Amino acid sequence: MTDSSSIDTVLVANRGEIAMRIMRTCQELGLRTVAVYSTPDRRAPHVRLADEAYHIGPAAASESYLDMQALLDVAARSGADAVHPGYGFLSENADFAEACADANLTFIGPPPDAIRAMGDKTAARTLMKEAGVPMAPGTPNAVEHVETAAEKAGEIGYPVLIKAAAGGGGKGMRIVHEPENFARAMEMAQSEAQNAFGDGRVFVEKYIDQPRHIEFQILADAHGNTIHLFERECSIQRRHQKVIEEAPSSILTPEKRAEMGEAAVAAAQACGYVNAGTVEFLVDAELNFYFMEMNTRLQVEHPVTEAITGIDLVAEQIRVAAGEPLGYAQDDLSIDGHAIECRVYAENPTENFLPDPGPLLRHAAPSGVGVRVDAGVEEGGEVLIHYDPMISKLVTWGSDRDHAIRRMRRALHEYEIAGMHTTIPFCQFAMQHEAFCSGQFSTHFVDTYFDPKALHPSNATFDLYAALAAVSEAHARSETDTPELTDTTPSNGRPWRRRRRHIR
Image (cartoon, rainbow, N blue to C red; front, side):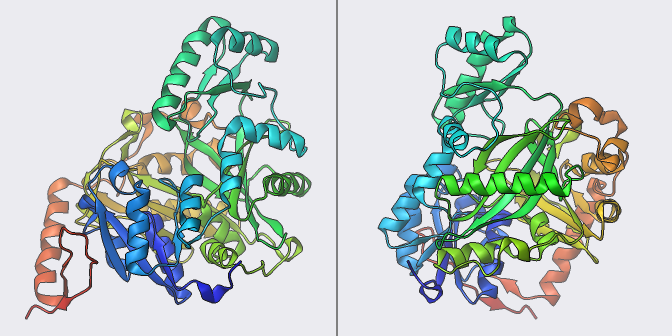
C-alpha cells in the first residue's frame, strides 16, 4: 500500500473528453500528467492539455490505445508512477491492471481480481446470488447449445433476454418474445458477442417488461470502507446504449433508495472491490429491482453524481489508489438538487442514430449558472471515424428536477454545432416530451415515443456557409491576435512540448 505522496505523475491511458476531465483534476491535485495519442489525434485538445504527450501508434485502437506495451513504455519513458485508464479501451482489462502492478505503476482503478469477477456476467450473477443481491430468473451459467438454451428459455417464460457473458454496452444482446425466434436470435447474439469481445458465450434471463435502468455509484477504499453516492437514472437509450442520464431517479422513494444502495454496497464487497465502480439494476413497474451488471471503472455519466453530491470522483479515485481512506461515511452524504446529462454525439437521429463523423466547423458550447460541458473536440477539429463519436457531455444542475430540465432546454438551445448531425435535436425532443417531464418512461422511450419527423429546427444545426465563414474569421483573428501553438513531436514518438510564438 502506498501513501498519497507516492503519486507524482499520472499517465492518462485514454483520449477525448475523459482524458481531459482526468487531467484537470490531476492538475488541481498538483500532479503532472502524461497524454498518449494516435496519429490522427496528434493535435487533439487532450494532447495540448497534458504536461507531456507521446505518440503511440496509428489510428486503429488495437495498435494505439489498446496496445498495453506501448502504454507501459510511455510510462517508463515519462517517469509516470500511476495510470488512469478512464473508461472504454483498457479500463476493464484485468491483464492491463496486472501489467501496471508488475511495472510498479499504481493502477487508478479496482484490483484485477474484482475486474475479472465482474467482467464475466455469468460469474458475476453467481457471486451476486451468493451475496443476496436480487437477480432476475435466468441461467446460472453461459449456454452454448441452442437446444439447451431454448429449453431454459421456456422454463423461464417469454419474453427472455439473451446477453453476452463477457461484455456489455448493448452488444451481444437480443430480446426474444416468441419461441420460434429464439434460435436465430441466439445465433446473432453469439456472433455479435464474438466480434465485440472475442467471446461468444451468452446466457438467458427473464426479460423485464418496461424496465427502468437505475445504477448506483459506489466508492470503496482499501481499509474496508464501502459507500454509495446514490443513483443515476439511465433509461433514455438508443441501441441499448445511454444518451440521457439524471440523478437522482424520479421514481425511487427514500426507502427504496436505501434498499438498493445497500444491495450495491453488498455487491461491491462481495468481489473485494476497491475504488470507484457502478452497480446497475433493472427496476420494474412495482419497484422490484434486479442486478444487471457491475462496471468496474468510472462511468461516462459520473458528472451528474458529482453535481448532486459535490464530490470529485476522479480525485477520490486517485486518493483511494494512493492508499488513503475515504474521508466520510454513508451518513455524511446527502442529495443536493437534481442533475441531467445529455450526451452530444455526432450521430443522425433521423437515421437511427447512425454515426456522422467529420470536421467540426462550429462548436460554441453553452454556459451560465448550473451548466457544465465536458468536450473532447473543439471547433476546427474533427470527430474521427475510428473512435466513439462523442463530441461532449452537457450537464445541467437545478434545485429540483423541473429546474434542471428547464436549464437543459436553455443550454441545448444555446449550443451551436455545425459540420455534422448531432443528438442535440433528439435531446431537445426528450426534454419537451410529456413522458420524460412527468418521469413516466422506460428504456423503451425511443421505440415508443420518438418520431424523427417531430424534431424541430435547432440552433445546433447551422447553415454550412455561415459556419465556414465563422471558421475563416476566427482563423484570421488567430493569425494576428493570439499565440500559436506549435506541435514539435517528431514521428519517432518523442514527447510533445509546448512552444508559444506570437505573430506580429
